[in-house]
Length: 150
Image (cartoon, rainbow, N blue to C red; front, side, top):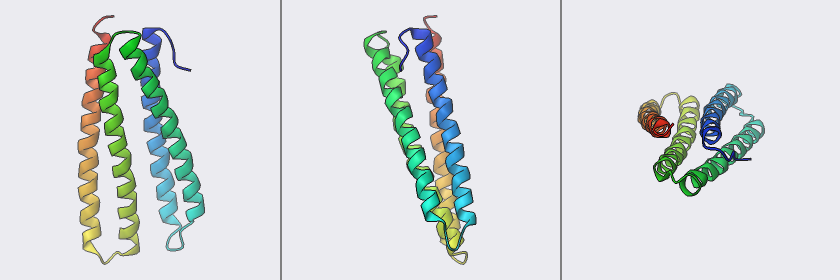
């Protein structure tokens, strides 16, 4: 349930964002475990993990969008709702990059002789770093703007 007062709503936003970070950690750990099952990968177990991660991210995103709507319409804070919109877009990109990185890592493990795989991994890692920097900037802007009227 999405809170109805401003301070609690902001706290819930931060809690959801930290849940997202934890979910990424579980996703990364699960993928590492999956890679250790190679060359005869335990895909069923990994598919279950991906399903659980997807459900977690969907729940977080759904609630984030509810918070975005409340900030815009009930608290007349369109700037904060815009930050959440940007955040959601960057988080979507981060998830896509993470999946891309996981595929590249598996390809590199399956084809250690292919130097392009390592190069691709480095390129994706660089994109993820840029993405995380953008996310951090959005979070700083959100923090500043949410404290503006306290």
